[in-house]
Length: 463
Image (cartoon, rainbow, N blue to C red; front, top):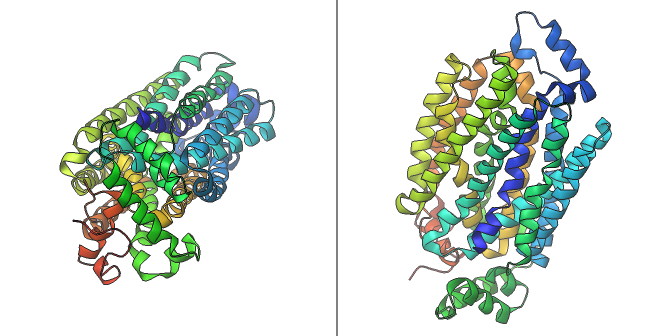
């Protein structure tokens, strides 16, 4: 139950991903804030790809992610000092405020400020919730429970698409769509009030007794938690021997080289699958290739439903078959489907499934579990900040890219998916079932990373 509550933080990110593209396609919303886009649609002749190519319109979506990037860097220190639970509470409160402001917006300035408040909420939640999940879940179920964050994210996308479809027929529908962002924020905030903080975070802040109580609460009152608590305490003691700053250690010390590379590569590749921007702009892409308004919104609903179904499949198999198998299978599927999309615009169902059972959940699982405790908050902050920074770049440039490259846009993403699949095959060790406190040993055994982590000092050795 603790992990389900924390994973529900994905609802706020997913709701925003799903809501913005549909709202951007609603004529009453465009008429009020972006009349030049409606004018371009009326005058369009022969180049449907450029209908929505407006930097101001894309700024409506992308402004959230600039704020989220800044918030994720601040949240690293706050998470380390105050714990994961407190940051989730802050994220929920900020997202609620942002939803209220965007729903009540009367001008673009109010709209953008509201989006930035939403971004602060997303930045804080994306920092804390995956860490909470990885640290609280038992090792044998960690993949499935951490993947719950992406499951709720996909559920938020689907709910947002359904809301857009229901409200698109009304002049005030966009206000309902944007204002309902407060609902998932309330779910997270109220749920987080009943959570205990993670044992790792409590030990880091000197609360060993509370850490033991937290373990007993989530493992059961009769569970023998002393061995797990000793491993956590030992990992924290090793972490405290280095006081020169987590970001600096990760950037300069050889034993953290694999963590640094993966902290950059995973969110970068996550973005370059192309699925995220299509989740944002699915209704606009469907309109671009000739769908009517309602059909475009229904296409986005179908896309989101397939993604959610694929995530359920991933949750069932991630801890049985491991991370790399899903990366490989999903990567091959996405390459095939991206090439197909380049030929048949709008055929996105296969690719969504490929992402949903591979990069979708694993993009959150891997960064949350590979870092030793001393750089865990910093590593997750780097992961989230790169993810949100690239989300901003992608959302700001996608419609212009679609206008310029047309169907070749998807061939571009196919090339990236092929590259990232090869990278994962070569450089990612399997982390299935390994306790967080023992994670250092997998780097010491890897064919390439063992030259940097030759003795596994970044974690407690496997026994």
